[in-house]
Length: 153
Length: 202
Image 1 (spheres, each protein chain N blue to C red):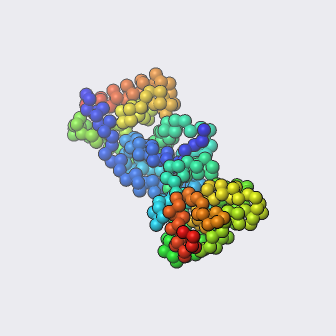
Image 2 (image 1 turned 180 degrees about the vertical axis):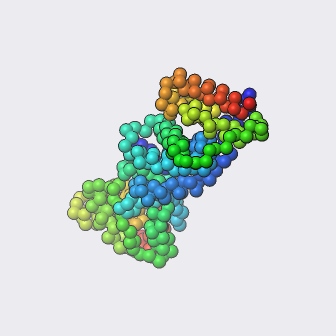
Image 3 (image 1 turned 30 degrees about the vertical axis):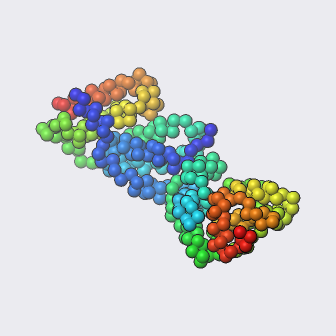
């Protein structure tokens, strides 16, 4: 089975990968992660042994790029992030939800986004995050619980 | 409680500008040598074409749609196929001049990766058929050193990966019948007419 042209892959999944990364890391870091993801995918692409579940493969790379970017940011002596402004929290306010999403542990965040943003099955989420299907289910549950606590507190 | 799930389903509003992001990342990929096949599309007087180039040169001009064309390139050349019009600028420019009647020869590096063996040999000879002239399938078979191979020459023309630049429209049947053309016979007639009434029989 041969691989589809990379162009087609970008056309089919690029928009979702970008949305996922902006959701995970914000518009600026998300854009950086998107470029890193596409370049890493291109580097590895000719060595793939088959063209199955290329969507999952792309998101596995994207997930890792968010984790890497967060690690780099932690190492940098950046000013301590301002604490979330609880006083103005409004559960209806989308921005508050997305800020809370970006503070989730990576595994929970990716699981929650794949589940709700893209409606993906747990089997696929497990593959992207690199855990069992049961653990993926747990991460979605835990992630959502944590979001509720943060946003509705 | 369902508010959070609704926000998640709707997605982040800031996820815009991906087109420009794709352009930037494609340029970066090209810079790193990660684009094995660059492609673009173009409208010409004889119809819509897809053009693609490798680092060696122009690898195809196709009258088929982009999906079909790119699938062949991915399978036969490399799956690292990306839309990168800049790498086809010279080819497009020369084609524009050709269609405007201002160019009679193409000066472009070519990559015959989509063709092999006898066909490649025939295509080399095809490239020497001058503007405004026609030859027969048989003539070309003789030039390629296999006088009996008219039929194989016909197949080679039908599978010519770089039509127009490799002028298979200048090849007709013995007796004057136009033969076939991948872009349709109207396109073949139009190209011959453009080159100066080289099809006196029609």
